[in-house]
Image (cartoon, rainbow, N blue to C red):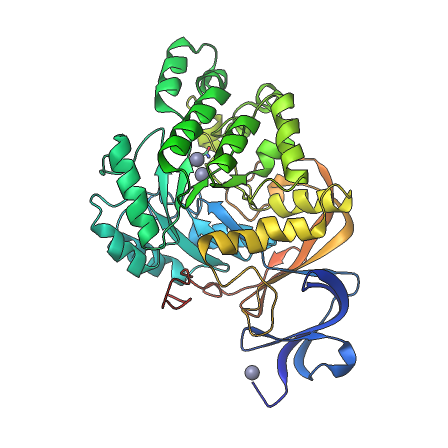
Length: 443
Ligand code: NCD
Ligand code: ZN
Ligand code: ZN
Ligand code: ZN
């Protein structure tokens, strides 16, 4: 950085800064925010973006993303997954560990991070499963894991977490090292019992074997066992589950599909609207959306879970849909329609995720990393899944008209996405790690 000279200036922009919207200029130097304020006082810059009519927000963090790659690169890879992120205005994603091979040790996490580093155009942090024995947690924390993920309905770890005592011991040990524990909360016994009764085609059978009670029951179990611990509940789909989780002091995430789609979509769209947990009847969805509007949720995350179209249309469709390119437009639409305050969108997508996972991202502040999204709150667009940068080019939101669109995405001070195209070189994104006591932010 030259004396008083910036690398990039974003001029004539509205900025959500310090809790309110101001008009002026953002300057970036060496990947960091160097100036926010009136244009007249801004430093000179080597490059300029004129952002008339656009609104700059802190770069959103999607805490629930399956980037796949490695043994599942045909579904998504590090480049296409993070391209999908920046095209959706998301600058940081947290990657889930149900990969092939799975992530369940510090060594495995570092290996996956090393492969990702060269390819990513958004920042990426990595979850791990519980390691085969608890000693492994120290190595995982040192490797920079952002948290531990537990699939309560189908344990994928060799650690015996079906034993409640063991599970509590494991969560305490993880928390002790600063690691939050995120749960896919569905009761395996209720899934099993409902599966035995399930009828119809594969979609119907899946939906009826993952009833709302399975989620509520799992959250109750976790609440009795882990009350007050640093526990995060993924993709909540029931108002009862949400209420119990909040009573236990857990943080709670909801996806746009559970907020904006009802179980009607299962009949209408079949496997293209099949995900776990499945969509819920209108009453539950309305209550969940009410919770969003009244500030009861901690995070909105996409659960971007891409599968190939062949798999989705085959005899055994796997649950999961891409979500990185629809989440911010859908929430901007809520802001544009004045149902959700802008400050709430920023809390749910930026500051909230950063606080829960201890990341030095998600805030637009002087000296902080220059991760930004410039949005147009007036633009009306139709969601077009065939235009997705993800390898999964389908969506239950395909064809929906929304008001509010990410136009430019800046990652680490450089343009990553602009007017429909990913312009970043692979490697622009950083592998990130949480700020734990004494820790550094970059891997
Ligand atoms: C996820 C996947 O495909 O990895 N699928 C899904 O429907 N959400 C698994 C998960 O998050 O439970
Ligand atoms: Zn410089
Ligand atoms: Zn899940
Ligand atoms: Zn998931």
